[in-house]
Length: 269
Image (cartoon, rainbow, N blue to C red):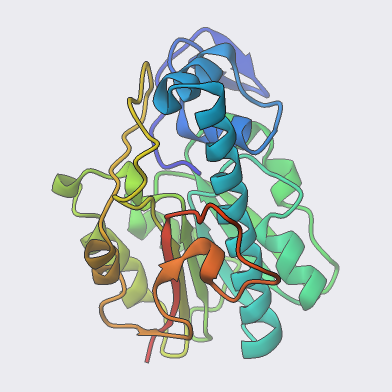
């Protein structure tokens, strides 16, 4: 998932310019998910980051677990809570289990807005705009730091007088502490009404498999459980609270190697 502003580069991709000289987070994430929209520089950066083929394979399992958490959370909100609107910040390159695919399979009238600033994501945005006839999806090509512009455009699809699920999964660890990601998140939470929900995940400080970012165009800031808990200030965590992604309402037995990425779903009172 991505929030970075793309650099100028030499490779056109679906009408956008993509920098292939450095790795970018959406493409690196796509590689770990087994996608094809990545370059050698992304694969090399991941190998350097995790140190070995075994480390990369573990990272793949963790990214898959992260994605599975997102699906379970969206399904819970659409099926059990009745949420019909989703704002997905830092969407990433489309995969088979994007928010709209899960949400609209559960409730066909769901409306989804995706936001990303990666040109590779933009090149595939047509996949994110696919929708049921009862629902609607849209894509905003923009930086989530520009919250006023994002919210203005999102209001063309979403009704901000009705509950909205704010999805920010795999994103906040790309913000340095000095950028104050908690304050950025608060701006979005302040914009959605009571009864809305927050779906959040972040790489944990306990994730000791990670070594170096290599030659990349993004930041990775693992955080402790207490730091991640702070992102949920002002919202009420639903059961089972703040846990690792494998532990959030699992569909089956827990794996041997837990994915040490804290996550949670919270309701805005």
